[in-house]
Image 1 (cartoon, rainbow, N blue to C red):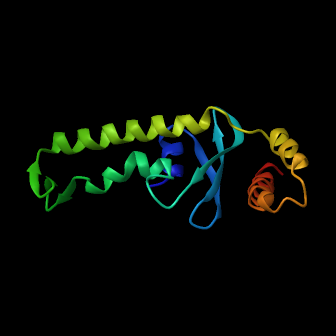
Image 2: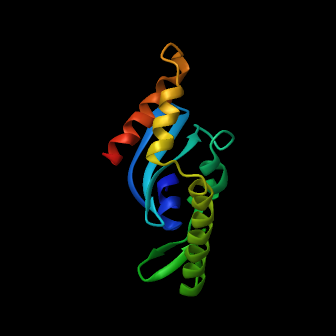
Length: 140
């Protein structure tokens, strides 16, 4: 599960993704959405306190499973309908989460403008420069 999955559930085609940083940093995905190619970005972290995806979906590691034609949640047997409903609701939640990132996409021109304003001697811009320079390769 990932940010990219939520973008896909929201209707975007993810062409590529880059994470910059180590245990926390920025991520960007170049997507095709509503007939347009653009860059969407966000931040990630190493825990549910500093990572919005983890904060929103950490509970999903306790998902129902199918085993031998039967369905289980927490070792309790559930119906196929309950199993399907769980995943349908999860897909809706993924889509809503992903739509938040697709609200303000960056066009090629916006990426170029952003890069032009970064100062060369600002060490903290290195990861951003890496991400946005990488994203431009999808617009060639």
